[in-house]
Length: 256
Image 1 (cartoon, helix red, strand yellow):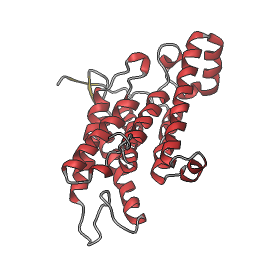
Image 2 (cartoon, rainbow, N blue to C red):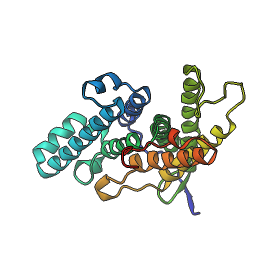
Image 3 (spheres, rainbow, N blue to C red):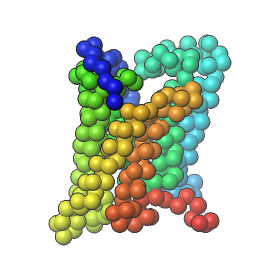
Image 4 (cartoon, one colour):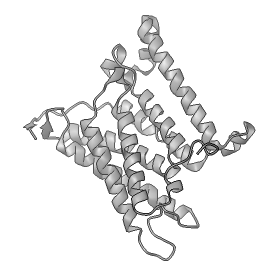
């Protein structure tokens, strides 16, 4: 693989990365089932209420982006409000990166268990800004696509660290241990889970490395990374013997 060495660091948008990390609110709400009580008002589960809210907001953002591409006044107003968090290309060429991330959450909430969904987003929300900072400030070995070896390593290590921190909190907070506990009720470590998380982190780092912005920005690392992590985590969990229902959700229980 061809590499080049550079000494000038890449830019790091602090406001964008703060907004990026705040995106964890969605999978955390899913994990905590925060919409359970409001969901009962509508006769649905908290998970499905969250799904429809995220779906509706994704549609709203998509309509807003197409509107600002069509009308300059809308685009100018949009950038006066949130322009500090956006890339230059997002002014006229591509949709803002929040949309593919919200769409990824729509898929995660609909098909994947709450643990898988949160772990997948942790890899993106923790790994991506860490990789951008380390790669931009310390990255020296760079590839032709601009990504650095140091950034890739930072993505993997920080994503795994964030995931293990969540799993530790998860393990300590539930009275009865489950498939995503770091150790079992008898005190044995859940060794398979460590390898599953590492595989998810590797999948996230690789997909981040090869990600490109295509289809007007809809196909973006904010979509590719969490979904690749979710699929890898799910496959690893099922292979290791975790119950299928603890990993994937049947969205059509009355049909399949």
